[in-house]
Image (cartoon, rainbow, N blue to C red; front, top):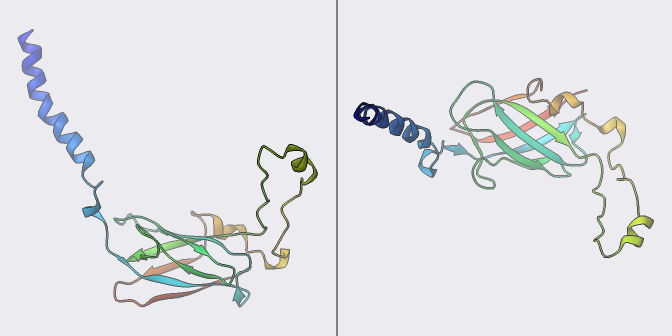
Length: 163
């Protein structure tokens, strides 16, 4: 029995050290520095229609995390990593762009079931087929678009998407 306790005391520091090392990197002091990053998404030389979402996914196994943002209906975006609009970390990224091609369907509460049956409408397309970006830009593994964010800035980007 005492051998088990002795073994436990020998193993416990290793387990405690392992758990402690797992918790390192979870606090706000471990944030990677980010740099203001904004820009415009163009498709066919014009601002991308419909708005959508944009993400910067690290290409290399660099420390830090991806950044994301919303693309407005004029194609403008501002990247966020930790806080809204704070920017992106420095490095090389694959750019993922997802386009909104239709308006959201208006939802009806549970209290108006009859009205809901009458208003079963499909989402109305707001982006003509010719203005829709290729799906490859929405694939984090295959998007052909890359950017490099530099600490010295300015990181004001014009992202030209092609067919």
